[in-house]
Image (cartoon, rainbow, N blue to C red):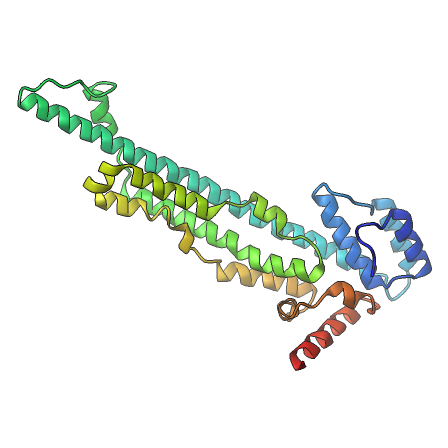
Length: 289
């Protein structure tokens, strides 16, 4: 098995030249190296080395091996960017939810202050005018979030969070199978869902009078914080599964579930077709144990 951490460009050139590793093993390493380069980490395979490998494999059964692996690497990168896009959209929706919650609290307290002020005038009591004046209080009280606005924002949160979560299990399984950290950057770019929801729910509880005197609004606002109940989108999971399956095999998730290591299978596989055959056999052996 190739030493992914210590191998150098000179080592890989020698390995290719002398046939010290199978084309499948070399191709799998090229995907790993591509991924590392895309994320600013250590990479040794430049265009010059790629051309060298292509030249060595030209007019052989391995002529198209490198193209296959590079295409797979590119598709994995596209999937990652799609996941990050969903995470960013979810983040924007959560920021909108924070603003709605803050507006609701502000509107409530402005209206509450106005009510107290009016009652004081009615009974001839002296009371300090609300901050910004009674006119400002009445203006703020009119800025109450509508049910439609809350519904739209809650739906956006659920949609984008579910789609984002849909990438994680499938990309994680693919990463384990290929020996590539496919979910690290997705998680880093994603939304920390549970802590955000807990923070917002605690914030609502801090608005004691709001909770006590405006229960319907609080109930509506809690739809914005219910991200903990969101589950990964089955449609997104199926989509990612099929994209990767088109390159490997429709059974690749089964391999991952049985902890098949493609690096180990690649060491005895001449090319992609042979690698898939060995992975299927290894999965069948695990099932029969």
